[in-house]
Image (cartoon, rainbow, N blue to C red; front, side, top):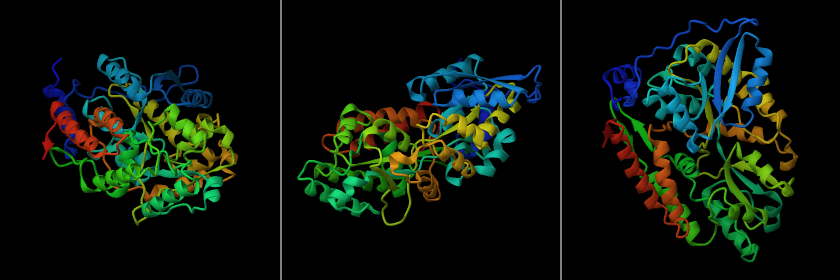
Length: 443
């Protein structure tokens, strides 16, 4: 099939023209039906399929089946999104054998919408999302005034730090980025050069996106008929220059994210803080068990106003041709708003995912042993940051491919700290990808 057809363009353009999301991938008119209407019985339940790579989702699906005899969910594990999961979903939809429900990270939603891979779920999920999702999250699943997915979690950026070493080196938790630099200087001096305040992980595009969002950047936006790319805006330049100075002045470590070197630096107390998000508490607890009781979480330092960025987070979506949309929506409603769903998904106690629905955070908290954080209520801390997430952030339909380019460029820049060329490479890559997809680019 050719990369663009009149029927696919007409169908999707009508739904999302106000955000310039003109579909260019193979597709067709929305043929999904709700013939079963989700009204199965215990003797003959409606059967739906659900693909995810996310921890705890198999247990969550099993819990749903145990309490909902009229609907049976068959869960299948797939590779993580950019590690092959998104490609698998895309191919399945185009081949006509897609699952009914999938998990997507927020930055992948516009990509799937513009390819015509998702169902316009305004009827099934619109009211649901309107009822529980924070504004900063709702905008990530609502495109062209249509609802394409239902948020599960939200990831405000926060600062994690070794409270014992902060006390040892005589530093206060920094509230601003100016104070952060002062603290970094203090740690290097007080430790006689043996430690640094932070291991920055300067190759991680998601971290950069959150920091840029906090500073006021808006990398992507849509006009009435075109996409605009603004990765090289002044706010992003300010962030790039700030971290360049810290790296050049040897005030922070700058290892590859998630690398053995990065882990060893924290294990050996050579880095005493990390920039993360609400979900990072679980991974820190798992990675550094020997430091139990020594870690704490604080709001991310800011530029003068308590604003933060967001990193990560995922949603549930119904695929384009699902013939069991109502049953799929019932499962999604339970998964995103029922405390039993959260408890089942987080039962292992290693995840600190922050539900988008505020009413579920108590249930999530009950699954997490906070002794690693000396009893600190990390859910209350992270939840309090959600209203401070910078508004107006939009992902583009080509951000996943743009990330690949930026990640490689950031990796090359880590030694010198000259990160700005990586943002310039991202700008060029995004503009090219938009035009290559047949979408209009605003200059």
